[in-house]
Image 1 (cartoon, rainbow, N blue to C red):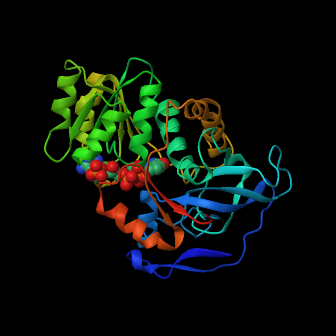
Image 2: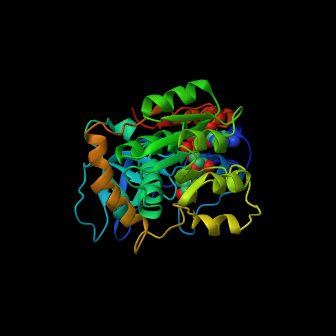
Amino acid sequence: MQAIVIREPGGPEVLRWAPLPDPKPGKGEVLVEVTATAVNRADLLQRKGFYPPPPGASKVLGLECSGTIMAVGPEVGGWKVGNQVCALLAGGGYAERVVVPAAQLLPVPQGVDLVTAAGLPEVACTVWSNLVMKAGLSEGETLLVHGGAGGIGTFAVQVGRALGARVAVTAGTDTGLERCRELGAEIAVNYRTEDFVEVVRKGTGDRGADVVLDNMGAAYFERNVEVLAQDGRLVVIGLQGGVKSELNLGSLLTKRASVFATALRSRPVEGRNGKGEIVAQVRKHLWPLIASGQVQPVVHTKLPVKDAGDAHRILEAGGVIGKIILVVRS
Ligand SMILES: NC(=O)c1ccc[n+]([C@@H]2O[C@H](COP(=O)([O-])OP(=O)(O)OC[C@H]3O[C@@H](n4cnc5c(N)ncnc54)[C@H](OP(=O)(O)O)[C@@H]3O)[C@@H](O)[C@H]2O)c1
């Protein structure tokens, strides 16, 4: 097969479309002929050599894909050759073929085409596992989504609305803020010119946010705790603003607040809160919201996979709204 390989850690120019041995499905796995994959921020880090794949995972970039099942390994139930699927991956999506644990497969949601479906598994599993399974976001609560215009952000805004929450976002461009409003955000904060703590407090009658979905880590830690409502939950999923921070724990105590930090890629497939359980919950609860149109995929652009370097440049430049899809087979 052909795949995008990283010649050596570095800039987007190190990505090359090159031959690699075909992967073979083992016990509990299927082989998927890839139709499309999508770019995630983690791919940029892996390309630079900072985010190695977990042990046993493909070294090829790509945390999600869509395609058609070509072969089924032993002890796989419920899937057969020819099924069109999308999948959560620990790696290997920027390729013509990829092996996937069957527990990480999802059907293509009703109303979504096969190429666009490639951009759904990573955002759907990240957003559902954090907002619902971890933070317990519920109807009537306020959710603050940092980076609301990004891949995760545009999805989180819609899921928040579908769950009956009031949604606030931060974004760095007027176009991004406008798109977030269209998707259902009521409070939209330009992080370049405004203080989100002030705007969210003002917009909630000084109550603050019940749940904060954070991509910035250290840079926002103190202010994220400040913006939390009583019994609020902060979920850190990204460290774009650094990893080390200091906090007065008294600020958590008086609010009875909780801080979570989670990663999806390194989780095991099996077991409680494993990828299999997350995928099953996404299929049961979130796929119907997509089928009904309440939650829609937001796509910034689609490029051929051979132009993966250009796709990385676009994401690195910022201002992307939704996902960048890489088409492997048109
Ligand atoms: N833990 C996990 O399991 C997991 C899984 C998936 C993703 N993630 C993380 O989630 C984050 C979002 O991922 P993604 O794929 O959606 O990436 P993305 O599409 O590149 O989005 C990144 C967002 O960060 C925003 N941003 C940049 N500086 C900011 C600031 N100072 N304040 C607030 N927002 C800022 C950008 O907003 P503008 O473009 O508007 O400037 C952009 O929307 C990343 O950090 C990623 O690593 C974590």
